[in-house]
Image (cartoon, rainbow, N blue to C red; front, side, top):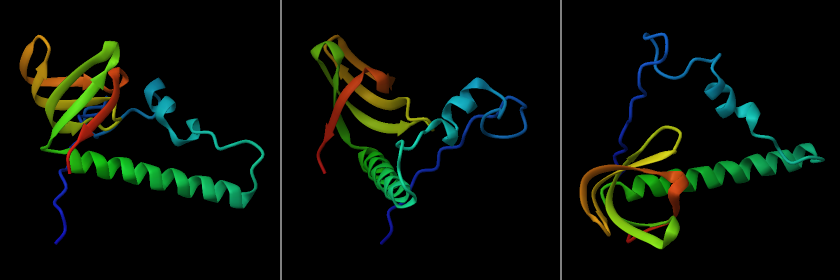
Length: 126
């Protein structure tokens, strides 16, 4: 049986009509596929292999995010801080994780956003 997948809708774009980002914005250009450079001095077969490897790694990462949804996840943060929370979702750019029942050394937060740049590692039980 296929596993259900949550669909997260993008916020309204800058023009108010579409969903997504303005193609003339700096953010769009920073995240555009042209910003990902392939290895230098590679042949056509080398580039295809690199592209295949990247797609496999990306798929594994996205599948791990789907698997984490609704599970207790332990996040190792900078400054040797470890927090535990129920993973809820990620934004489209995977810059933030939304979690609930975040247990920190200072107490429990009902809902929170964790910046991915502050996370060193995350673990969860299958």
